Image (tube, helix red, strand yellow):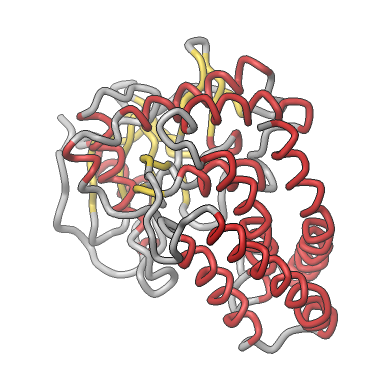
Length: 347
């Protein structure tokens, strides 16, 4: 029988306990096999098979020394909320060990969505619609903001400023510093003026909250699996309430999870139908906000230049990763006018 939530156990860094031992503790029975699953560079995921034949996903999260965000608590609470509200296309939370930064979830069989098709766009939109429809439930309305949420125009500007200053306070290679000072900052100044003007013209104050949705906060095809019954979705470490514009912008801009170019228009049409009905400003807010969210993603790409930003890579691989990320940040900055026109034409 599964433990509902283990509160005891060995403290310290998650790596201090072998995955098989941790999985056995959480599952309440010995394990026949525990294998790592390829994935992101923050948390570690393992496929667990017990001797009785049960299958689970073991997830080990960074401790507070590596990442101060409470990823485990956020994801555990998000999955319990969705379970209570009847969302069945996500893992079920089964056992949690907070001191050892680990949790056990139901295993979801599926294949990565390497080449999304039109049906996948419909399924992703259906999942977002399911969450949006639950936003008024008492439990959902009381849920915290998503990680890096932007419920007001001021939050979006502040996020760019905070990320930029963090990079500028870091010793950077000359090409990165030159990109930030000569390309990024002048573009940011122009786009900020335009954003403020358009926001005022729309009658929205800088600190005025916009209509919110329940957001996975890292949605996209990189965190989806294709199964015989449709898409299932994983990774809710940043889940919470947020502006649907941020959710949509992040999906469009994610380096690995975005809809392919041929399917962006159907995706934009689907989210306009979903969010625009109860929010007449949604389309205009997406058009004026997308350039700033692209700036956010330029800075996210440059996180590899922060201390520890490429710690998972070998030195030579880390250098290649940094060069690649700088190139992508440059390309994204140049592509911002095209993105804005694409949204304008689609909506």
